[in-house]
Image 1 (cartoon, rainbow, N blue to C red):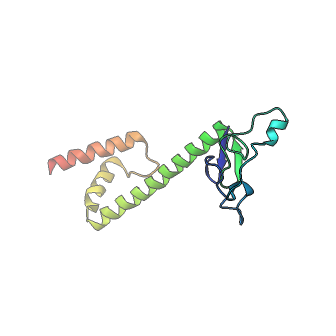
Image 2 (image 1 turned 90 degrees about the horizontal axis):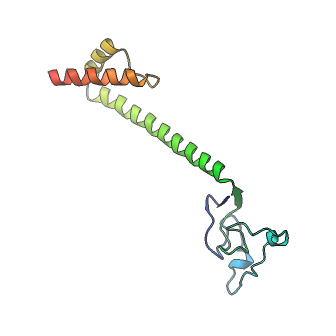
Image 3 (image 1 turned 135 degrees about the vertical axis):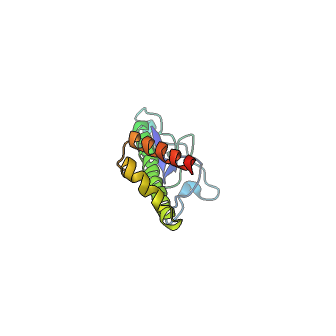
Length: 139
């Protein structure tokens, strides 16, 4: 299991929580952890990153998350960022067509290949790009 604390993996000893208005006793000057963990009473090793474990006290609220869930959330975040980036690039390209007055070139490509949209297939994209490159070579 990964232990996520305050949005980052657990690390560091004696770091006060940014969510807490007052520092914990373990982070006080001159204080030391007893090394006690309630998980030890049950015969279980302490969870990495929790107070009293060998890796120390962490900052922020800690939640144990299975690796599969953590990986799925990372993948989802990555895919969302790619999606946002693609929409921003599409908008930039669209504004460049109108600003730089290349509208006629794309109207010609649209008439021959059909309009290219966010829902176009990869085959549609390849056909459109090949046609556009052919027309640019003819210029």
